[in-house]
Length: 396
Image (cartoon, rainbow, N blue to C red; front, side, top):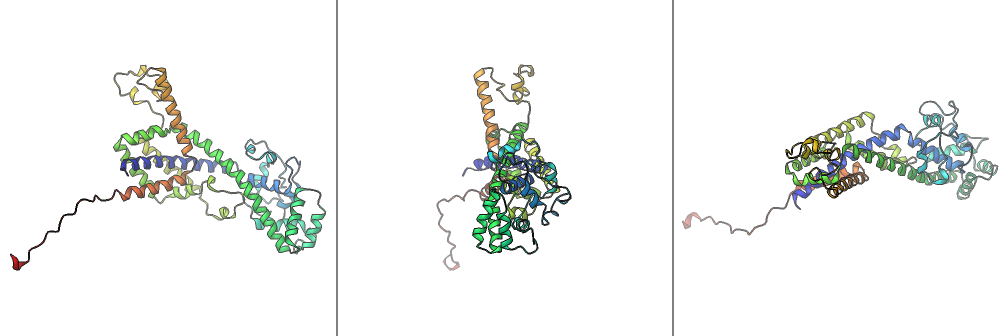
């Protein structure tokens, strides 16, 4: 394979990975600031336990979250001491990502501050059994749980619990397992809501970064293809960044759009990246972008070279659009300017959609391309020359 093609691919992958890493870090900050994991977990619990989204209160959810297994898991104060009431609503616009039947399941700011962002299926099942066995929570029996379910009103929760009772066949342990499976299945759907919402946030952040950085995939590819010095410099920087053992690989690997599920036990048990590591990664990504732009890569908003270096064009002859590279400074025709602008918009769009796979995916591609570049072309195979014979001493 032509080494120039590989180097151009490495340069593009490096820029995509760097900007996608920034998108990942910003999205993680937004999710943390808005407490999205806790918010979606609460919505999932309310839809699971209280069913109808038009219900004025979340009685079963409130009762469950104020049991003994939950009151010590909050962030600031125990739920019971805080007078937890997750039925209180606050105005938020991001609930529109939810299905139509779940859009009004909003939670109060107080509930988000108190509750954890993860609840395991085991803890949920135990707390639910304790809530149902109101007479003897220390030693719940299947008969007491069955009586409590029978005394419930006609609610979706009662229907689901009756199904779990039928599966249990009179065994409390089987009832625990059925409730855990019911909870896990529902949280898989909640995780889908959460991931779709985060993907929208990531895409919006990516579009904003593309415009702020003036990141045009077409112009970057042209510059890498035509400028050998720039291509070698960016390829070297990309290989060094891909092989570095810093905070960024781990930070990008834990990006929220890659699996921060509200009910995923494996995700909750995974090692979390500290705020210091995130800051170090952010500084590293900014440095990488600054070095790439300093090497001559067409990033950031700059005055067009034709409006500065070309003596045939005075600065006053360049319009604002031409000065910032949005139209062609070398042509005054409307058609050529429109074509230039469409290419710019297409380059922005290509770059924005290239960020969708995420930084971790692009870093993996970058490592593979680096391995391909390091392997080099196969050695040339020419006609073999006959071995030169060394005359023996007796035959001279």
